[in-house]
Image (tube, rainbow, N blue to C red):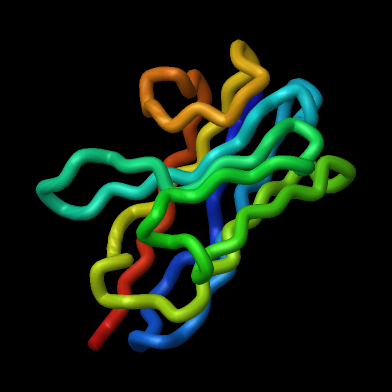
Length: 125
């Protein structure tokens, strides 16, 4: 198993930036495909970005393309989500997730077995 802990959330103005981190403990981090999801109040949890085990492949939801960048440092057992040009509609709790069953980046929440507790991101207009 792997345990995930997010950090880096906060309150920023529209147009600003935040960098989220996801620290992993337990089994070897590089065994897992990692992703970021988010959930706004009253809405379903949705896929934001994913990264392959090695970090060589990434995939983004259309609504964050060109603004967010996912990365990972397997030597530090940490994943990241750099968020730029933030908009009020990006306000949500952001979760990191990991799975080791599929080699591909998958976008469905139920395909991820491991989740962090979430970190709040609030964007003011």
